[in-house]
Image (cartoon, rainbow, N blue to C red; front, side, top):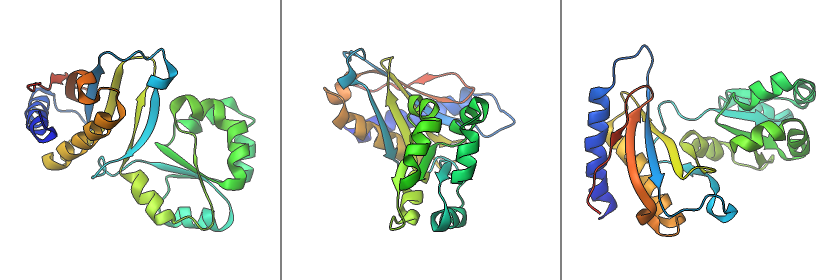
Length: 220
């Protein structure tokens, strides 16, 4: 079955997930849950963490934190980074596990000026690493506009200790076509990444944040 045919099944599941979800006082995310089969996640070679750019932002886009100084600090601020941490602030935060843990949860993705990478690893590595959020190094010559645009549209796909992947593909109120295109991009990635491609998928579900999961039914 082609990805486009799966797209039709995804669309039906998305509509049903919206129908059965109760109204909430916040804008819920649309999530894609993929249960895998014939994958031994005990083997390190079968586990992965991947930053995947999508065609469309999930809502307003992923949040970005930057560890920088000087010109990079200014450029990150101009581009609207949700969090910017200087070397001095980073050194201070490194003395507080509570603050370090809080900072590691603050953003979806992180960037760090090259010279600050060792300090970031030393002070925050144990909090960022397990979440798959170690920062991408940047330099004065890095095109931050391009990096920000890519990360705003990106999601983190992780296959860790359970044969299941859960990823946000949209928000309530986002055009249906955008959500479906995002979902298909995830499936295209998995078709290339998994040993048997889409045949490694046992089941798929679509759900809103606090809504019930609706199974995606497609002919294999």
